[in-house]
Length: 174
Image 1 (cartoon, one colour):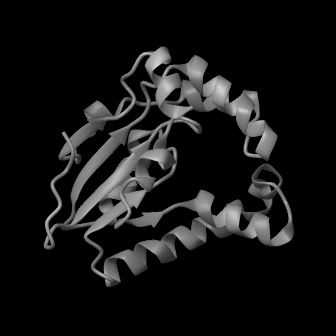
Image 2 (tube, rainbow, N blue to C red):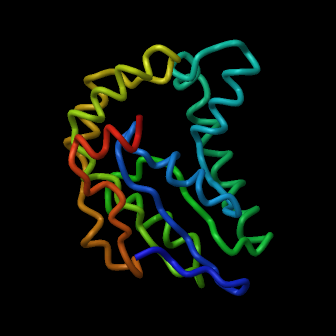
Image 3 (tube, helix red, strand yellow):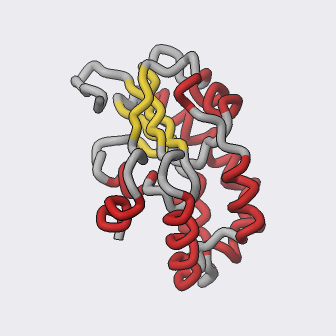
């Protein structure tokens, strides 16, 4: 079920999934959304310095978190109707903290946690070519920390975006 958006709607979609699971691809189809993303911020700074995302991550991750809080304030002050929080958001605690910042919004979780891990590993390998790969030990740790969003009590609904076979996913995401 996709959320129905009217001019008076106030909707928050919290993306949930590993890097390379399709979160940003999904959000790019929702062109009228106010997007909150630390990756976008880090990528912009990396390009300005001629660095890769991977080389910039440690340098800018703290600044990116502060930038996210500014984006939250901007989204609320601008009365954004559709807000997408595009990060991994793998734990219930993290998703709940985000949801609490948007009182009065109907909250959805876009669940990409069911994307096959083999596909995540393949996509991570492909991301290495453009400097956006995640070290395997970090990716494995992230994979092991996933908490299924189906149990999140604050969410109006969970949009199951990643329940596809690896063959279907390869065709869709490649």
